Length: 115
View 1: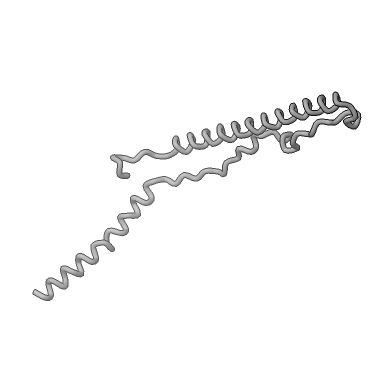
View 2 (view 1 turned 45 degrees about the horizontal axis):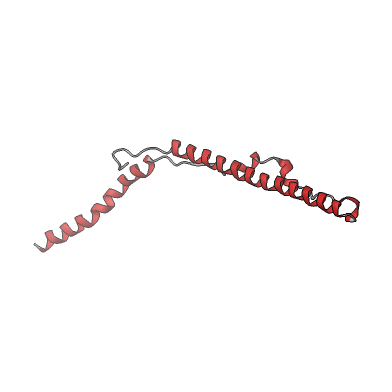
């Protein structure tokens, strides 16, 4: 009896080792998806890297009208800058959405919810 119990225990312990090579079938069954790093920054115009120049103060700011004209022009420059920011964020969001859709399309669905 003792010999058969030891043999049964060794057999049960060896079963996981026999099953390991079969696990390779499931590991290789799912194709790996390699994506390139997002290159969304290439869609932002190069001229935007220079920034927005400040408005010029005419006549050295000696008259009140010069300051009013300057502040109005400076506000216009700020509006341009803020517009570029929102445009750049929109470009990046659209690029990320495009990349996410490509990954979702390339991902294989599971068969029977298992494989």
